[in-house]
Length: 302
Ligand code: HSE
Image (cartoon, rainbow, N blue to C red):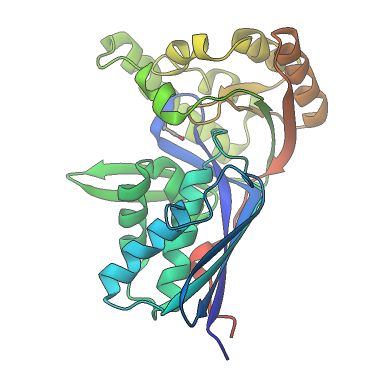
């Protein structure tokens, strides 16, 4: 039978307010990628989110990531049929490129006999994609903290109780690269201290499900204030979410916004969507829960 492998990789929200480039949470929206060896050539088919935007050729991110694995393994299939079934919206701040890269690496790795271990996969995906704070939760599931120690990524998984979040995505074309250039190269010491304390509080508040503390713990001075002008109505969207009882943060580099609350997620999402509408932006929303899927466990199907 033709070797075939499927992997399922979750969406991720990074930063969660103060944890710029180090904290990430996996959410239950998934991209599923299937690789099937074929006799020759490459075919790529994209279904769902990103159809018509994501390239269906060798420039596809899933394919490029897979190619790196084949190079490292010194082994490649004669031909490859790739099918992407995407739930994660592209350019949304929900880790769609981290999911694509990881899916490509995991599927290729499975196809050539798993030469890469978890640590290799984390390092390679982060090198290709550039955002370990998305890659780590997508690879390990749940809430993760990642630090770079002299070029080596150290991941800590932080167990948290089951929880739901609301995510609101405005119709706005904002790339991570663009949102990145809005950031300063230096920040005041007081702002670094403001965030350092809140990262600790954020971890503790999520571990204990303390939504009251999350209101303070999701505050940030390192990136959100600089990104605010890029997203029309963002201040009002935050205020609407907070008024509806949520702790609110930009999801990754945006433009989506994530809201933590013990209940009432749909109402919170609708209130934030209305604030986007007032600023002239259409939006979509999801009520999601934390994903604990472990994509690295993907096995050959046939
Ligand atoms: N931590 C990155 C940023 C996340 O905020 O730019 C990108 O998803």
